[in-house]
View 1: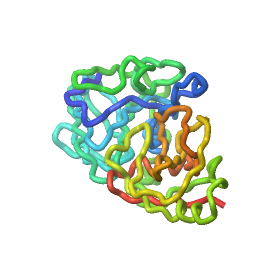
View 2: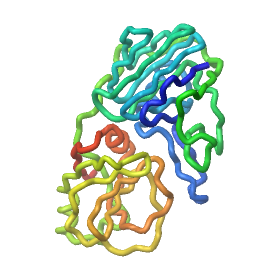
View 3: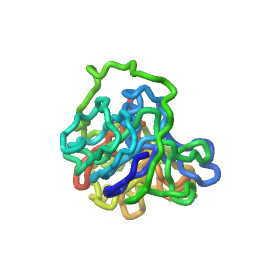
View 4: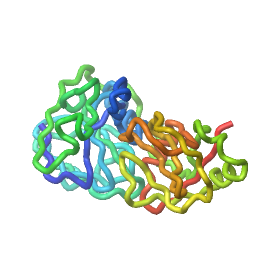
Length: 281
């Protein structure tokens, strides 16, 4: 059992997402930085889609009533286990009656904690990912307790030596053309692709709002399908990037689409950081 002594800023359980229900208005959800979440499981020899704990900017303090192994990936934190700093991106042995304090992110936005075998949480509609209105819990709170699964595979197979431990400092987000991109004028397309967006502090798991108004006139469209990574422009020129918990339809022009890697990169950008788009050939 693991108990949350503090919950951190916004801590949830996520996996690779909930697929096959978007036609019912249910978002995909899943880890914002999918590569980092997958890596945490891989290091522990878990299945890739095992539930992990996603922490945002300020992590929780956890009390372990079990002997296990953990791996912490994603944003750079200085995790403290029983008063001693422990490494990220590596297997860490946590003994029974241990306290793990994650603290504040030194770089990046979101971190991931995996445990050997995975968290024993309820799977709803094929996913462990927490989402308001779908799962009983939307986020983890102080006092919550999490059980652990019995590992399906004992031991470890992956070498930790070649694991990439640095977050991408890239400001360019790789994109493809959205359905309404070609409805913009050539000048408007150039404005969009030269846009220097500033991440609004109100950005969240549903969408990232990019400051600086675009001087373009997006076409009017009927409500249409959207997905994580869809870049919309409102009539007032506000640029919105939909993220993992985004709605399934929208009425703003869909001018660009982020690649999966670009969604991961954007999810680690802190408020007031700048980004720009890079169109794939």
